Amino acid sequence: MRLDKCPICGGKLKVRKLKCRSCGVSLEGSFISSPILNLPSSYQEFIEMFVLSSGSLKEMTKRLGVSYPTVRARLDEIISALKKEMEEREKYKKEILEKVEKKEISAKEAANIIKSL
Image (cartoon, rainbow, N blue to C red; front, side, top):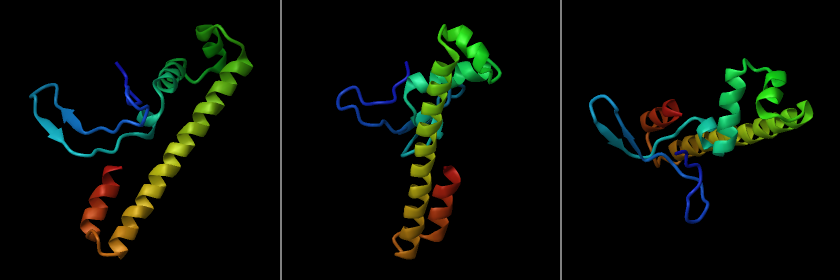
């Protein structure tokens, strides 16, 4: 099951726990994930189908049973949402650098946070 929004309030969910499928080790914290994972699940499913269709909009029209302009419009919508997510990530990086300037965190901590993005 994919969850991209809180089932209670509709807010964005954030990854807080990771667990290894092999050894069972768990990590808890505040993790940054791919901007694609921050998109609604319907967008993620479209992206998966698009990649499996080798990026062919013509193939997507067949798979989805809709017109080319409909598929193109959906792709443009997803591109716009992905750009917004990436802009938010850049904004977050700037906030981290501002914290370094204010001496709220060390340069090393900032570097580790930014590397994890």
